[in-house]
Length: 236
Image (cartoon, rainbow, N blue to C red; front, side, top):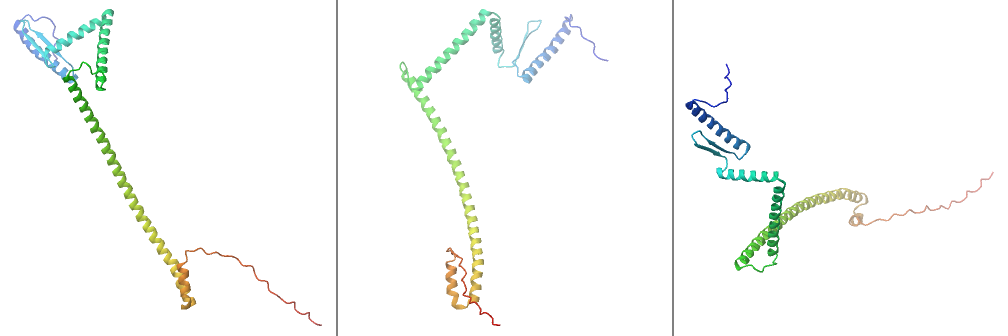
């Protein structure tokens, strides 16, 4: 059997009223804590009992900061509802931004070495320290960039060196294969010539082998005409 619906009205019995107040106050504070943690909300809770006893909960550092924020936000909302107050509000905002811009421009001019009149020795010393710190940071950043570039170039140089080494190995292998092929082709032909012509022609073959790389010019010769005599006529 479910619980019956509780009628929301003032409890006449003072004891029951105090017990209900204690239970619901604890539950309300628990819900406020959960809301602040789960939703990242700034929650402020103020409770006065019937005996004028104060109970409060603040999710931030203090209740005073929440109340100040509440008053400021309420005042701004009220000003935005009034057109005249809204104009004044934006005028104040524009004046504040204009003052910030002037301060930044003045600081920039002083950093550039302009309009230094009116500054005391302490102000000039602080400006000098600020410039030295800025220069130190710029130099450190520059050195870091140069170091990174040198490191990258070193890595690229190592890669190129490795590629050159691999190419040299391949060229040596190709050269060795060409030498082997050269020996197989010309070495076999020299042996055949030497065996067919005898030992007297060996120097000539050796010279041909040594000058085999020279180009040889070939030319076709015209066939020689033979002097055939006309045969005598046969006698009857």
